Image (cartoon, rainbow, N blue to C red; front, side, top):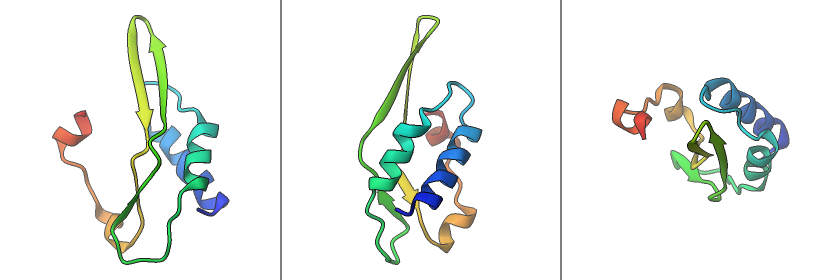
Length: 85
């Protein structure tokens, strides 16, 4: 993936996540290493890299699983159930 696009995505990810601060370098590297060829597919899977954080006796893990990458993604919404997971 293009570095400029990866940087934009990581910045937006950081802006959306409220529980812990994402490791920008980890997620930037995941995105840059992702192969996202031209295609009509709705998304591409990303390598399974996770950030683990321990905070006040709790453990959190953050990961990026997919990149939505076409015009269909503009109005894409996760169900409330999936958001909670």
